[in-house]
Amino acid sequence: MGAISGLVLTVGGVLFMHGHTWLVMAAGFFLALLTMFMWWRDVIREGEFQGHHTNAVQIGLRFGMALFIASEVMFFVAWFWAYFNASLFPTEVIGGHWPPSGVITFDPWNLPFLNTLILLTSGATVTWAHHALRENERKAVIQGLALTIALGVCFSFVQAYEYTVAPFSFRGGIFGSVFFMATGFHGFHVIIGTIFLIVCFFRTLAGHFKPDHHFGFEAAAWYWHFVDVVWLFLFICIYWWGKGAIVH
Image 1 (cartoon, rainbow, N blue to C red):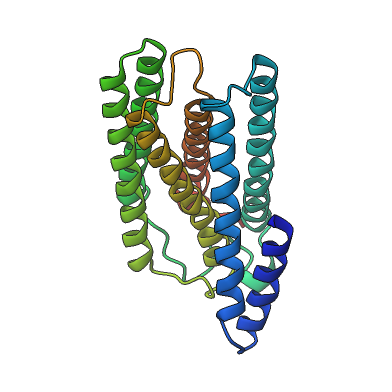
Image 2: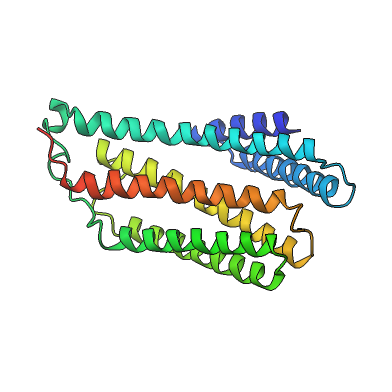
């Protein structure tokens, strides 16, 4: 089902981009979501109710999550590679210097710094929730998760507002292209991580997690910390260093 939905989604996307109907793409998207929902539902049932997540299985799940995050890191390496290739070795096409002529960059100590504080605070709250879970303090877990989710939503809204006031566009050249691909891809991951945490929030309310058996929560916390670290690199390299890097 996963392969079929991926094929339908891809073919539908190509058809839609060439001016044909969007219904095939919508069908593929629906099938992909349905496959993921059913798959994760079964994983939860196997671990929470059927007792199949033994210590050996949990080790395998941890390795799988670690490898998944490693593959995500490679995506961001591509965006950073493109950024540093363009900024450290600017071509004559963009005037031989970085940022390109006519590009007004963001003030890193305005909205970007605010979002950095928001995301770092969310990293602290999810860590608080994780430690509370290990100590079996369920009320603190719920509070920590609720704060983390709220901060994640705030981050997404601030970034969306930042995009609306951006003085450059995605199609305005290499700077805009790399900026929106890197920060937008990260923003997409924040949304995914927020959904991940929302699922953990409701699972916590349902009493699924135990102090010694909560890999679903642990995986969500890993993913959220990954999002935090990537944003620090984005803030330092693209917002802060990029504003002051006049490379000739």
